[in-house]
Structures are given as structure tokens and as C-alpha cells.
Length: 325
Image (tube, rainbow, N blue to C red; front, side):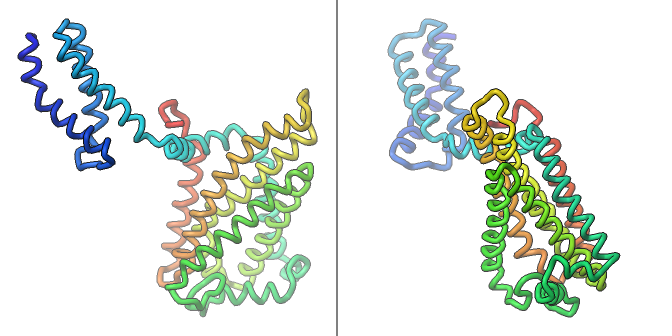
């Protein structure tokens, strides 16, 4: 193709691209900015063609200037932090959980094992609940899940407008439990072991007691939804703490400080994912779990779906090399 024909074909596109660059360089992102990456790539191809075909230096230099300005804008508007956060959410977090399957499995067995065993024991032997919880705590739990209550959970008689306050309360409460379970792993893992067991036993005792007195239609529909994220997060926080404790107990050929540093680098990433899970759990607990206008079957259906989504996310997400880092 002759140079004149080449210029006539693409001149309007180059002028539009130059206008986009002017707008971006002055901090104005117009409606065409979403097409900027595609336009930039086309211009680079056209520059390569011009150089390959030996077109005049005036045209080549003009395209080079446009390509240089486009390169600056293209990479200036990329947000590495946002990209890393998105990559961690889409693939890095579930991949990390799978890589750390040993502490995750140990923490899950401790937490869910104690929860299920205590729940079954309290259901069969109701008086056993008082060996772990004070009578005042038991009475408070019964009031929270009373079938006659208009709203369920903590501060159940609150107005709907106060849900956002409960969201904040659940976030702080859950964050506190997770951090306690994680950081106590520095006590050679004993702290994480303790908090995994005590949390599992306490939740199991409450579940067994409320099931035994017939509050199944209020308690289980309330917890099944946000439990998918909250219980998973507690187990992962314990796994992060156990990893710290194991690095201190068995550093291998590394010095204990270096082993702890390497373990902490991965444990902190695990905790970052835990905080995300707890945010989701708090949102569901504040805005969905406490509602009583929906029937128990719908709560169960949503809860089962959420558990399946959590399981699928940690089993399947991040397995392809195309997932962003």
C-alpha cells in the first residue's frame, strides 16, 4: 500500500487518538477512554507497518510520538495495587489455601471436630452446656433465638435502620476473634490450638443446647448463611497461627527467626483473605440472617448455596495460569 493511501485510511483514527491523549494528559477521562487500550494497540501495529514498509520519516516520527504518549498514559493509568488485590481475590487466596493444606486441615479438624462433638454431647446431655457456659450466657442465647422474636441474633429488637451498626459490631467482633486465634500462634502454636478448641466447643455447646430445646427453626436458618464464611475464616485464622507456631517449633535447617519470617509472610497473606471472608460474613449476618420475614426453607436454600460457593471457590479458583497475579 502506498503511503498516501495508508495515511488517508488511518488519519481520522490518529486524530481521535491524539484527542484522547490530550484529554488524558489533562486529567480528563472521556467516554472514549474505555477504548483507549485497543486504540493504542492498533496504533502500535500501524507504526510497525510504517517502519516495515519504509514510509517517510515524517509519518514514522508522528506515529512514534503518538505511540510514546500512549505508552505513558497506558501504564500511568494502571493501578498495580488494585491489580494485585484483584489477582489475590480471584486466584491467589484459594491457591494459597490449597498450598497450605496441612495447617488448614489440622485447624479444620480441631475446630469443626470439637464443634460437632460438643454439639452432639450437649444435645444428648443438656446439662453439659453449663460446664462451658454460665447460666446467664445460656439465657442470653435463648433470648436471641426465641421463636417469638421479631428479629434474630444479637440486639434482635433493633430497628432495620440500625443494621449498619450491627454490621460494624460483627466486623469488629469477628476481626477480634480471628486476630486472637492467629496471633496467639506465636506461643509455639499453643494459643491457636486453645482458641480453635474453645471457639469450637462454645459454638457447639450453643448449637446443641438450642437444638435440644427446639429452637431449630430460628437458630439454624440464622447461622447457616453467614456461617459459610465466618466458620471458614476462623479455621483459616487458626491455620495461619499454627503455621507460625510450627516454624518456631520445627525450623528445620533455618534459624528460628528466618523460619518465622518466611512463615509469617504466608500467614499474613492468609489472614488478609480471612478478613475478607469476615467482612462478607458480617454483611450477611447484619442484613440477611437476622430477618424473619423470609421462611426457613429459603434461608436453608441460600445457606446451602453459600457453602457450595465457598467450597467451589477454594477448590477450583486460581487453578489456571491465566488467573491474574
